[in-house]
Amino acid sequence: MDSDGSFVQIAQTRQCAGACSDAVEGIARRDVKTIIVADISPTSLLKFKNAGIRVLKANSRSVRELMDAFATNSLEEIGIDQFAKLRR
Image (cartoon, rainbow, N blue to C red; front, side, top):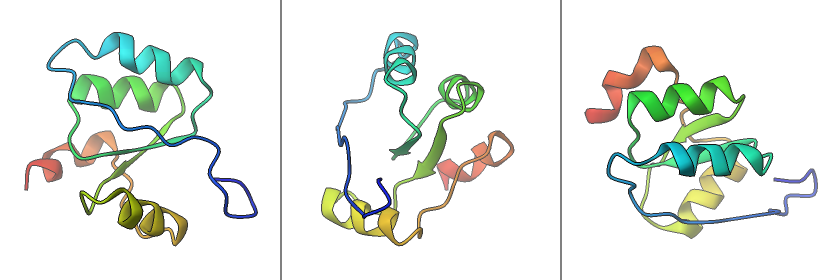
C-alpha cells in the first residue's frame, strides 16, 4: 500500500496443494512486501519470511473487508513461531 492509501497490486491465488515453491519464488521476485493468507504451510511461511515478506492472517473471505483491515493495520502478522495458531 502506498503512503496515500492506494494499492499497487492486488491478486488472489488458489491453494497450491503442495507445489508452492514456484508461487513463493514468483511472488518474492515481484518485490511484494506483504501477503494476506487464509492458510499456509510451514515451508511456504518460512520461505516468505526468509524473502523479507510479511505474512498476515486473513480474518475474512471478502477482499474488500481484507483490504479495509489491511489499511487499518488490523490483520495479525504470522511469525514462524505462531504457525500452530493458524489451525485454530
